Length: 278
Image 1 (cartoon, one colour):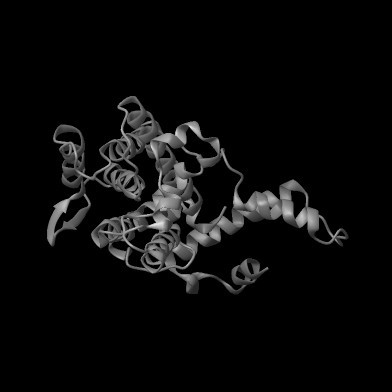
Image 2: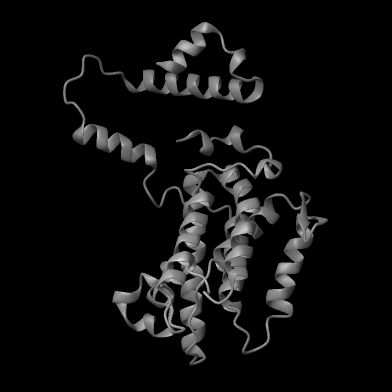
């Protein structure tokens, strides 16, 4: 378990510090990937054709072509090449709001939640569009971004945020999102994936109010490292700690990390610093 996943690291919202740019952050990686796909499409676009988007987009017919089921995930990393705003508003929302959510739940769980929202949105799109005999295709991270935004709203409803430079509590943003997607959805013919948006909102609500956690679905990074070390690491050991020793050291490490979080690294004694270094 990394320090981002520890409970004391997630006690308070970090919205005010959301501007930090961390290379390994899921939000950072998603923004880079989506921007790279957008730029690649501009480079290879010819005669109004968008080969990169066409390669990644989700089509209703994909439901009956198992070899294209990976589109259920890939569509969430492509955006309309004809509207920079489509990419910009998704990524700017993810940057400022997503950082707080990933610090609340940890990087691993954020990845599971975000990708889960994209997949649920894609499955909803396939169901709705095939039932309505629609030939529309879909691209964009909106379903995942809206899911993250609503999860932020559920966790911090009174947190002040800025909407077009006006400060509002987060719950007001949540009401706006719900109203514009359920009460007054986009008119028919508008290029908005209303069904994908709705799926993202409902997914976030189910996750929060159902107290879901997807950490048990996929192996943790720590488990992967342990397996890799046991499989490919050196076979000879001069000393093997028993489970009780490992548990005590893990508890001590948690205590010291919590102490650093509360009082700073200078609060550690020389002995405690040596323990963490070891």
